[in-house]
Amino acid sequence: MTAVTAKGKPVKKGFLYNMSHYKEYYIMLIPGILFFLVFCYGPMYGLVIAFQNYYPLKGISGSPFVGLKHFKALFNDPFFVSVLKNTLIISFYKLLICFPAPIILSLILNEIKCMPFKKFAQSISYLPHFVSWVVVSGIIIEFLSPSRGPINILLQNLGFESIFFVAEPKCFRGVLVLSDLWKSIGWGSIVYLAAVTAVDPTLYEAAEMDGAGRIKKIIHVTLPALAPIITVMLIMESGKILNDSFEQVYNFLTPSTYSVGDVISTFVYRMGIQKMQYSFTTAVDLFKNTISFILVILTNYVARKTNDYALW
Amino acid sequence: MKKNKNNDEEIASVRKRKRSREDWIVDGFAYGMAAILVIAIILPFMQVITVSMSPASVVNATGFHLFPTKFDFSGYKKIATDNNFWHSYLNTILRAVIGTSSGVLITIMTAYPLSKVNLPYRKGLMLFVVFTMYFSGGMIPKYLLIKNLHLTNNFLVYILPCLITGFALIITRNFFMSIPGELEESAKIDGATPWRVLFGIYLPLSKPVVATISLWYCVHHWNSWMDNMLYVTKSNLYVLQYVLQTILTNGQTADMETMTDVIIHTETMKMAALVLSLLPIVCTYPFLQKYFVKGMLVGSVKG
Image (cartoon, rainbow over all chains, first blue to last red; front, side, top):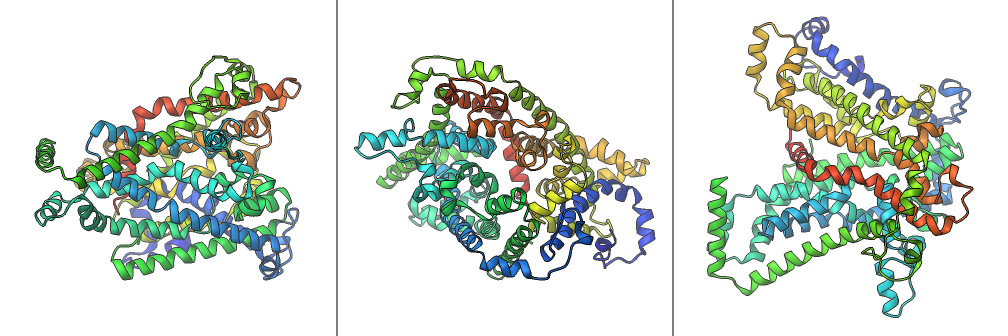
């Protein structure tokens, strides 16, 4: 707690006075602070093992310190390089397809004036968000099944061979991107839709006076109104470029698709939890988390410079 | 509301007057795309439901499986006799109830002091919370921590490590900050303690946000399986999603290994298990949907 309180410098009264005067508030905070200390900052302390040869029996205090050995090993590890490449490629595809899709959906929904249909489409599109990746992967794998899946049956009827999409290395990344799109497009559109409905209707009227058609109104009124929120979301997304979704990839991944689908988190799980290379995989995670953190700070800085609208 | 209606009518009348070709194209595109999206989301669900209630002969025949042609509930019967499945179902319900109620309690208890603008060290405390949203120790240190705390193979491992999420905390805090401070002032003059103010005044006024974060926590608990996979090896503590995962990948749970006609039934059994796990979500979803969305919008207001 002292580390935290030291940060709150602009305080006129002394520490003891504050503690006694706001005693009940601080008592209320105790469970929450304890939670963050133990379960969020505890693992951060555990990151020390990335610089050690960690032996579970000796613990953090007893394990020998080896400096940057694991980080050097990281970049000489052929598996890690390919895993990093997979992570970046998959994230890039997701950013390319899954980021703009909800924006487009919100524009489309905004053009629909038939309220019952709009409500229905929204409700249906949110539904997959509430379903776990275990279930989604089960559903998608069934849907893409070579013998029963509608897409494969269409392919067969057109005279092509059916494809086992989920096990085919060429299609695997596509499956990941599209299943993510399927799950997140509706839910992602909520934020944009809220911003779209908040647009001042007089702006549309003015645009109409100037002879703007509906497409022009979308481009010159709706999209500029969305620009700030798009910036913020882009910041959040670009910070996640290394945060592959373990829950998703793990449920789709099979040994036949390791070459294209194995990402950092699944790699860490296999090497760390199953093969007990604790120090090496912690170094992998630390590398990933540090880069992600720097990315968020950087993109936020850029957004504030250009747009006056940032996360903080 | 009334104003809105007038506005809509106005817009409608404007559109009636001059429906250009552009209108037709835009409308056609919008309705068409929305319809395609709806179909793309519903179709996989339809196939799962159909396969779950079809006999093996139909399931193994090639062709579309979007509407059931013959009914056969042997998949459901197999799952119904699977004790592992129902035990995990019970564990999940237990976990959702305990985890959600304790999580919401701790979240509002933490959010309330942080919503007080004049609380000393508030900025530092917020930084302390927000930092955890952007940086984490990662899978391995957390795993070792849980192990050292002796939480492995313990029901508490489902509850304690996910008591608070930073996002829910900030949303709750923002909501509390929007409640006028005069209410608290006057209650304090009457001698109310902060505890009384929180539970007597703030909580009744915060129903929408409490509903939203409860639903989020509840969905999180219903859907989580990673903590089970990482920290729990005792099968009587397994949760639904993890058991479902083993059913989906192996086609059978541990005590069904002796069955002979596995191949014929696994597909229907898998899909039946899937449908059963989806049932609570799909049944409550239409009634609860508005709360999810409300919270999302509360959250997008910056604090």
